Image (cartoon, rainbow over all chains, first blue to last red; front, top):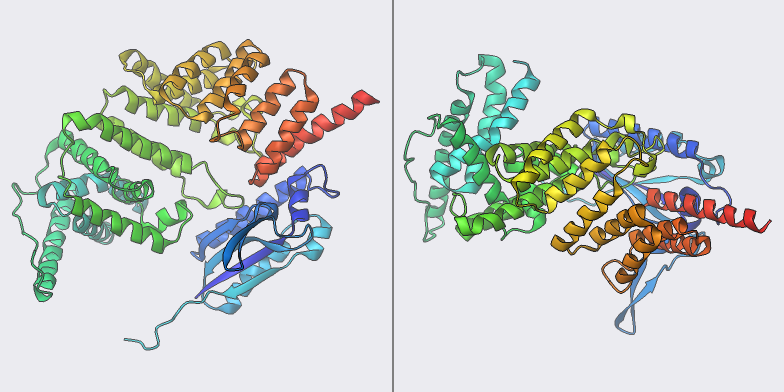
Amino acid sequence: MKYMILTFGSQQHYQELAGLPTSEQPWTHDDWAALADFMGKFNQELLDSGELVETRGLSAPVHTRRVQLQQGAPVITDGPYAEAEEVLAGYWVIECENFDRATEIASRLASCPGPEHVRARAYADVRPIDERQPDFEG
Amino acid sequence: MTATEIEDLLRRLTPQVLGAVVRHYGNFDLAEDATQEALVDALVQWPRDGMPDNPRGWLVAVASRRLTDLLRSEQARRRREETVAGWALTEPAASAADDPGAAAEADDTLVLLFMCCHPSLSAASQIALTLRAVGGLSTAEIARALLGSEHTVTRRITRAKQSVRDSGVPFALPAANALAARLESVLRVLYLIFNEGYASTSGTSLVRVDLAEEAIRLARILRDALPDDSEVSGLLALMLLVHARHRARTANDGSLIPMADQDRNLWDRRLIDEGVTLISAALPRGPTGPYQLQAAISALHDEAESADATDWRQIAALYGVLRGLDDSPIVALNHAVAVSMAAGPQAGLVLLKRLEADSRVNADRRFHAVRGHLLEMAGDRPAALEAYRAASQVATNLQQQRYLSQQIARLSSWGSEDTD
């Protein structure tokens, strides 16, 4: 079975990550070093166990373009999200035994290092990927 | 032989075996399946029964048998479906297991490369097919390396094999008048694979099969087949000279370190020596193409004792020649930087001014970042700050954005110190 693990962040959180001068609590060099180390090991373990299908990080929400129908015609909006609105930031697609195993993998993200205020608000979702399983064997 | 040694040997032999089977039987797509099956047989049988005397001949013979089986079942299937055209089961001209000697082995690999990089295929298909057929990577490995799903890669390879078959490309070297253009396409594919190895998204850089090293391996195969072509040597030299710096490019926090700030002790001397030897031998042979020029530029960087000791005049001159061959705005940007380092920032800013109207690059992060750098060199801090801010606004990669944030913070604090 395949599952997706999703993580979330707002434009504000991205600014802190990027150390933009406007952010009040920018990530330090050490914060980043700890994150890079943790993510490297996390991904390598999933790769070694053969459970990793794919993982990607998304660019800051400000780079979003939204396409929406208005009076029957598609209209494009740049940067539709509010500063503090949390949106998809990155994901892993994993293939593993069952939902519990997928949850166990996602739970490891709880030990991901980061500034305390980030750890306090962070969460990850695990969702089964909609795949049709064969109804009958043989 | 250990299991790893057997795997290495099999990977080296894959393109030769596939090439030999296609040369004898045609049918590239089925030949590829047959070769894969022979490799699996070898992986099972060799460790158990011992190595055959002639591993390559063994593989070619097994793959040929498998191919005959596949062709028969394909024929049967087609008869069942009452299709008009069946496969013509051609008898091989000679026993495929005959060892045709080193020259023919190299030729088979070369023809295979030309086939995988056929211009009728999209770049994505060329890359996937080359990694599979010549590189001997599994679809899972290719998918992981290209950050795609295995399903997509499988489909892409299947389609590519079909279009090779449908286009009726003969399994032979292209005619002399088409050879140069076709070789250019092979070089481009290998260069794309190499660059793909460097283009990683955040968090995933550690999980990729090392595509840069795979590209270097493929470039070595190509050079073994065409040792006298100066651009082939130039491409291999370029890869070695760039890859030599890879350990110094990233800090432990994932941030990118510009060349001027890199710890040159981390540069790989062995790769640099090999690259410099290659490019030094290739350049006088001519004709001088873009890969040799870029390799020569890289060699000048790699051989400099320090950033300050870099021969910028020479680098600027080489970029000037490269611009004549390559219209890319990124080459123009690099040229402007080199000219600034050699002749002062004003000269570089004049060159940048000409790019302001170039829609391919005037909204690009790199354009604004280079402008910021040159303006700072020229002492115009407010304008430099503006340029870095413009770059930061369009940067979509977190590490690149972090670098720009540092420049902005540095220039902002200088500004406030000045007003104190």
